[in-house]
Amino acid sequence: MKISTKGRYGLRAMLDLAIHSNGEHISLLSIANRQDVSVNYLEQVFSILRKAGFVVSVKGAQGGYLLAMPASKLHVGDILRCLEGDLCVVDEKENNKELTTIQQCITENVWEKINAAVREAVDSITLEDLVDDYNGINQYPMFYI
Image 1 (cartoon, rainbow, N blue to C red):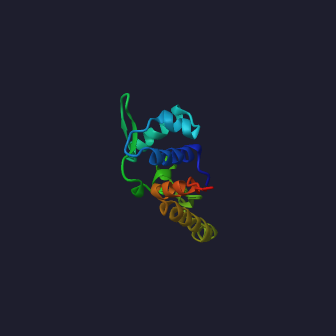
Image 2: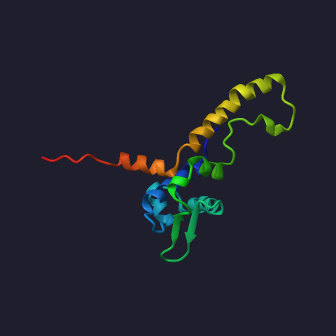
């Protein structure tokens, strides 16, 4: 499984929004500039995120985007699934054919375990966790002379 640019840029943009909004609307242009991403590309990504109910948009000169819910309620897994679809590395069942014994053995012991680990990882991280980590990284110690 490889996360596409839509998923990577979408997650970066959501984190940027969570960090910089402070209850105010944030324009896609400001997010695009900070993240070095095309505004047109972000418009497509945010259209998907808005339809999924993760962000709300306000039109007009003072418009922009806000998170639709607290960052503590937005899980990375939900955002990635919204933008990427299912996060399975392999889905042997999609062929609608009976699995051979070998396929079933590999599916149960390899693919399903990898899929479960990926789900567990991305569903255990919230945007709030990422904001907290970002703020911790950006804390510079103060030195006095």
